[in-house]
Length: 520
Image (cartoon, rainbow, N blue to C red; front, side, top):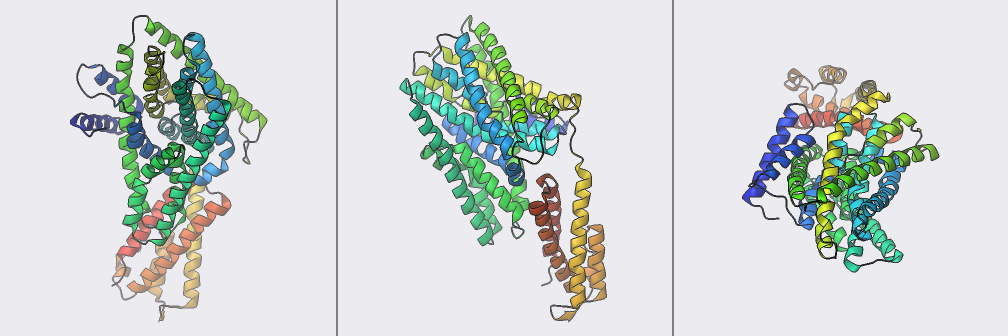
């Protein structure tokens, strides 16, 4: 994809629309979709790129990486049962169901291309689901399951798409071929992703230059994706694995001071890429509809209605079966109300749209070249409708009586525990009576104690006194103790990362302020 004036104009328009939507307090997906469709219908203006490989590498890989960076590895591990069931089992079921319906409506369509349509539309979208789930005031556990599912099922869906496109190119594949592709995709993607993630984690722990570590984190999705794809693995799965490892290391390593800079950069980059991806989906909708031959619109309408029904029914049945058959690998059991919310959260988005770019080349290379227009139009219409319905998730949750967790009380308890641990560390230091060979001044102790009880930085009057050096050293001990207590509460007592992250951010700010007050 060349960086031309048209591409830059597209990015600028997408960011402008997203910024206005965010400023007005609404989700960015629907405005970007609508504006993109309007611009795409004009006889002039930017067009969506048609090189699927470059799209996946330049947009999708860092976009998925950024979303995975904001996902808790700790929470993901706790909810791995339902996440993996939905991300693997449901995607396989939906792919076959959609493929069967597509071939029933279009009897002349090849099985491989029908299955490709199912593979493209079966995964929920990480970007769309994360946006809706976080804005919907849902319970933390539901949000974790939805976000984890949407990250992992991208790898599953794209792997199934690879199987379908291979079958379309070769004419047929055996069961052995399918198993080989699936094994290489999953194992190869995980090995590459974990290996690159461990390398970055090692750099974070051994190299004291935060700039180097953050630069490696910034480029991490590209080698993860490229190397995994080169060996036949899932590039998206590799990107997710790398991001989860890096995000967990950033949160667990109190000595890593590049955390705030990295989080800020990835928030901005994810926002830009999300806006661009949704805008591209909107741009593609008019072109796919205009390209339809007379009489094909009716088939598209039938396909869209049928596919939407199949996706919803298969998800509903699978979720209720999953809830009824197991405890989902966690200590708490989901109920029918939560199952309804999980079943309704089926938004598709940029991942499906970008994956759809892979379909035309395979279709044109076969005797079913005419059908590729219908498949593309169906794909983008299903994406648009699910995105338009996605804001109703919070309404459905309220109707069935599912409410968000009251995390304020737990956050207050967490802060109280940190203050208590900090006071304990201060008392231990005062009991020793000496710090850096000098007796502890009462003013230094009082200043740090006041800082702890108010969770505010120490007053400047103390830093200007003769005991400023002792204040600085005592603050350092207190901060180290608070970091350790925060990680203990997270790792040993299961404090959710949704609560830990903002407190960790506050400690990072205090730590940066503390370093800035270091005496020469």
